[in-house]
Image (cartoon, rainbow, N blue to C red; front, side):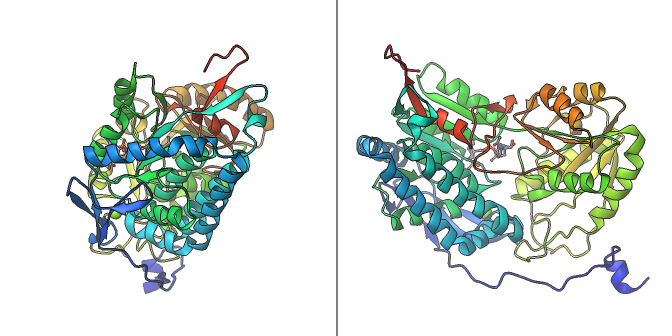
Amino acid sequence: MTTQEQHDPVGWEYSPAPEQIKVHIEPKNKLFINGAFVSPKSRSWFSTINPSNEQKLADIACAGKADVNNAVLAAKKALPKWSKMCGSVRAKYLYRIARRIQERARELAILETMDGGKPIKESRDVDIPLAAQHFFYYAGWADKLEYAFPGRSISPVGVCAQIIPWNFPLLMAAWKLAPALACGNTCILKPAETTSLTALRLAEIIQEVGLPEGVVNIVTGAGDTGKILAEHKTVNKVAFTGSTEVGKLLMRSTAGSGKKLTLELGGKSANIIFADAAIDQAVEGIISGIYFNQGHVCCAGSRLFVEESIVSEVIQKLKHRLQSLRVGDPLDKNTDLGAINSKAQLKTVQQYIRTGVDEGAEFHEVHQDRLPSKGYWCNPCFFTEVQPSHTIAREEIFGPVLSVMTFRTPQEALTRANNSPYGLAAGIWTDKGSKIFEMAKQIDAGVVWCNTYNKFDAASPFGGFKESGFGREGGMQGLRPYIRLQNTSGRMK
Ligand code: NAP
Ligand code: MG
C-alpha cells in the first residue's frame, strides 16, 4: 500500500483549499436595540470561540433584565406604525434584507463557519442562500396576506420573542424574523450563546436597509436572557427552536399568560430503506441524513431502518462511503464534517457513544488522521446490533452518530419508526410509489422525505408532531403563527 492509500483508503487526497478571505470581527459586540448598537446595562459580556481551534473570536454583550426590557419596549413602540404600514412597503424592506444577505453572503458564510464550526461548503451553499430565500419568500406574502386567509380579517399578533439555537444560526433567525415581519409584527431575537455573530451582522443589514427603529431588536446572552425575554409581560408571542427540555419550560411559563407559543424541538427521525430502493442513492441519503452539519440537525435521520435482506450490503457501502468523508478545518472548501459546536456538546456526544457501547451495541468508526490537535472533533460513526430499548435508539444525540436497525415488513418498519416520543421528520427509500404513499400517510412526522433527505425550501412548511413541537415554519403555513384572524362575528382566533 502506498503512503497515500494508507492515508486515504479510498485513494483520494485533496490539497488544502482554505477560504482565503479574512472577515473583520469587532472585539466587542453590542446589543441591537431600537435601531442602534448599545452597550449592555448589565455591564456583562461573554466570549465566543471558534470551536475548530478553541480561539476566542470576540466578546458579546450579555443582555440582562433592563436590556431585555428596553428591547421589548422598543418593539412595542414600533408596533403601531409597522403593523399599519402597507404590506407592499413592508415587502420592500424584506426584499432589501434578502438582497443584502446575498451581497454579503461570503462574509456571512465565513463568519457562520468560524463561530459555529460547520463546513464552509454548507454555510456557503445551504445556510446563507436559504436565509436569503426566506426573506425573499415572505416578502412575497407581505402584500398578499388576505389571499392566504380569504374572507377573514387579519391582524398581527404583536411583539414577538424569538429564541433560536446554534445549529443554523442565521437561517433560524431568518425562519423566525421573515414571516413575523411580513405579517406586521415587531420582534426581539435571542440567538444562542455560542453563535451570535451572524445575527449581529443581520442587525447591521437591518440598519443598512433602513428598517424602522425597534421593528427588530437582537439581544444576545445565554439561557437566562431567553427566559427573561419569554417571561416579559409585554411579549404577545414566543417562538422557540431548541431542545424539548427548554420547550417544556416555556410551555409552563407561558401557560395562562395569553401569549401565543410555537415550538420547534428535538427529533429522533427514522430513515427507512426498503430492499427495492436504489441502494447507492440511499447510502448518500444516509450520509446527508445524519452527517450533514456534524449531525447538529434537529431532523437528522439518526435512526436507520434497513430491510433485513440488504443490511450487509448497505453497511458495507456505508463503511466505504464513510472513508471518503473528510473531517477537519471547517474553512477548507473540501471539508465534509467540521467541528462539534462546543465542548459541552462534544462531551454529550461522547457520553452517548460510551453508553451505546456499554449497552451492547457494536460501534463502527473510520479513523481520520488529519484532525487538528485543537478543537472539538467527532468522527462520523454508526452502531449496529442496536435494540429499540437502547439509549442511542431513543434519545436525541445531536451529533454524527447513527443507530442502524433492521425490519422485515413495512408494518414492522412503521411500528418501529413511530415508536418514539418525537415526530419531526422521516425518510423513505423505495422504488414503489405505492409504498411511499402508504408509509408516508402513517408515519408520525411533520416532514417525510421520499428517496431524498434533508432538503429544505422556504415554500415548504416544517415542524413537528408529538414532543418535536407544534406550529409550522416556512410556506404559507408559516404565516399562521404570526397573525390573528377575525371571523365575520368579530371573534379573534
Ligand atoms: P436549547 O438549550 O434548548 O437552546 C435553544 C435556545 O434557547 C438558545 O438560544 C438558548 O440559549 C435558549 N435557552 C436556554 N434555556 C432557556 C430558557 N430556560 N428559557 C428560554 N430560552 C432558553 O437547545 P440547543 O442545545 O441550543 O439546541 C439543540 C436543540 O435544538 C436540539 O434538541 C435540536 O433538536 C433542537 N432544534 C430543533 C429545531 C427544529 O426546527 N425543530 C431546529 C434546530 C434545533 P443558550 O444557547 O445561549 O443557552
Ligand atoms: Mg462560537
